[in-house]
Length: 347
Length: 272
Image 1: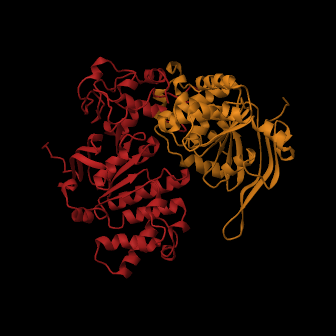
Image 2: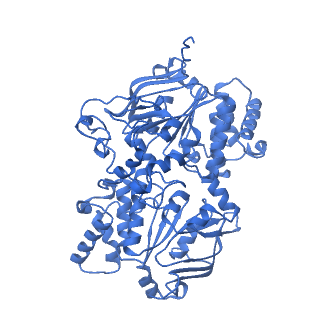
Image 3: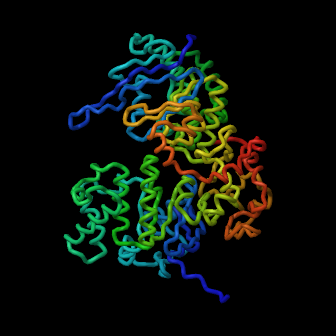
């Protein structure tokens, strides 16, 4: 067999560093996205998920600044682009949807006008054409009688319908990459299921690559091909979704998974928890950021910069973890829950 | 204490007037019993009426029709003084821990507020009780001087729980009490709530949109849809053989992390 070089990634984020003032809050974040691929970025509040996404698309605002790294979209670095250049890319080739659709839509402008505006910003079409496209898009995202709804205002839509409108706006110019920041967190569970189905179908039909940011591992599990776990501003694990949910490599990932209460959780025992709290940006310990909460940490974890490295070993796939002794396929995982429930509770 | 359920809700109706003048029945003829020492879960989507029902039970709002009995007494027929006495036995914990705590006050004062309101004990006795309560919710004694802004979400929710327990209530309404918390912190608070229920013999009304969390904490579960209670069942029954089609729809919509992984991690024999 001849070696085939892998296709260049569509989105290639390299060593992204984001700071608030002089304090780095996102450090050495790297990930790649192939056309149509889906990455889930999971983690708890304050872990840097949203800042990562906002910086990738250039929507962060002072005092947040990107203090290092590259964001390559088909090889072009978005971080070094001029304002006018990035305005052309944003919305057209890469777009974003947010958690709260009620605050990202303008309450005083009709739904139709907001979708048409997104189209006309990037494409030389007439008002009438833009309006027709807007109706088509509304229909695509499952809004019933779309043509009649063009004149409606955001408050006349339910939360789920507003999020559909946001998806219609985000996809109006057929971007190659869609960043979704907690897109279903504000929605009811049945609405969430429908919106996720919709995103799934549209991303598939249009070949859109996506990044799904969520605190909900179950949501990421159903939607993503790859999972990245963030902790204290760093990615501590990256893995194929199937490997991740079967064999998390980083102790934090394992802890997060076992603390999730879904309908399959073992309820006969106390839930495994993680002792302590994440470190505060700006006062990170040397070595591993998770070590003070990790039941497996020792002196070796306290020194030097710990790199994201391949876990290796049979059955580990391409999993990378920022840990000097990650769990491997041969680790006895039955013991972890016990180790995790021990320790001081300091919620 | 009388026999029978601690809380008895009979045919309760609560309507609101919508801006266009029509009546909207937020709670539409709900009947349910909450047994002593039980954790009753109330699930449903936003607008289903679960919070309005809990506000009727707490008498934060007056119901239009029906009756609500607490420990055998119809709350609608009580005098102000009787109701006040009853109120100390009923407490509530809300979703947003920071929003529900007075941010100008130190933790000790927040937790002692119900004691002060009911003129319970001397200053010294109250300080003693605050220390006990902090211990009960597993917060260090050094927390007493902190203000809510200096607390994490989990710590703030523990303070709210301590305050709810200050008057040794029988019944605690937990309205989305863990919904705003991160995964790992939520697990800690759920463990704490279960532990407190067992130790203090508390009765819970646990309101949540999260079925996984309700399944963990509640033995009996009611499902609300558009103001009506469409199904009430024991936990095992509800999750394995739901009777109402809407319950089935809700269950089907819940995403599951990874069933295989789950059983691999928490095998009962080595979980403790």
